[in-house]
Picture 1 (cartoon, rainbow, N blue to C red):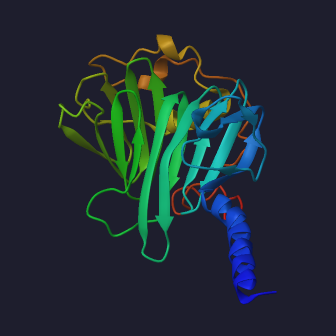
Picture 2: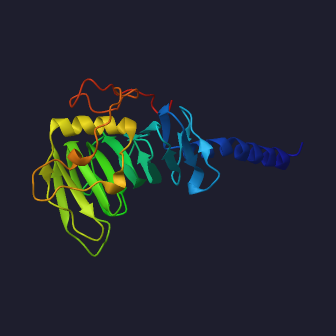
Length: 265
């Protein structure tokens, strides 16, 4: 065989071997816990594909949980996203380089309730992890919080950490800094509402709603001037304890194991 033939064959083998590696490079997280029926719209397109544990998720994918279904994703930077029943979340963008310690993550919540744990703190001037909803942008560095959506409003509940919250409307520049133990709401085309405290009972209810989903979310009305919890008007579901442990920092709540397998494994 002529040398040029060897060269052509070598180039062909290089291309063939590189194809599966390139496909794997797009995987930015894996489903580590799946309960009930959960499906995935690859690149946001039909047909929907049923999800099972250890399946990968890529930028552009949309995750949908059905009634009585729940799922937890572990991303390549050890961020955990737990999605309650009847919710929908898109992985708009997710890039993480452990060598240069650079991250660019954008999640979009279209419906329902989520619990997010960003454990890795990076030394950056601007938050490199954001969550978008119909009404709000949530900017994160290292924290854990709940996002609850209703028509034309977003609620953020922060058990631990700091969040920067603003309207999705770029013409409304006001930003609220939410601290541990506080919640706020952002109405459509409005600046964030004031930060207000929530109680341990409210936090316990949020954990239970992660199993049941939020009942009658369209009729959920926030409180007026009274200091009552905004969760007080949601019927408290009579459901068993979580069958999927939520991953949270051990310093916050030791009863929740970090759980799961690293996406790279």
